[in-house]
Image (cartoon, rainbow, N blue to C red; front, side):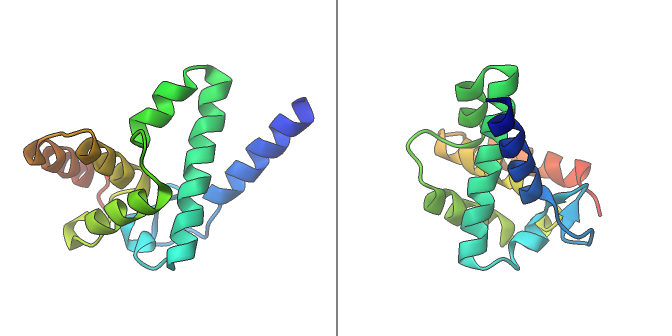
Length: 130
């Protein structure tokens, strides 16, 4: 069992491995990098993101709540991809990490008011300057 867990952690960690460039934020892909991904790459990135969140959450408990925080119940990876595409298409969001764009999509899916989503994105622009 430990071997499987270590393998999963290494696999999930490799999803985050990327060359340092303007397309990432402390090792996390930002919207600028997201916009350069093909549709398939973006889809696999989301699968890896969800798996990484899930693996971490399982290790520290609270997996369901943690995944629900970033991925709305009942949404598909394709729907999440479209939501992130809309957020990352806005030039002012180019430095926001993809995980924060995903959270903004989740806020929208959970019925947050547009002002609340914009406030969240405005804050993310401040804490992700580059």
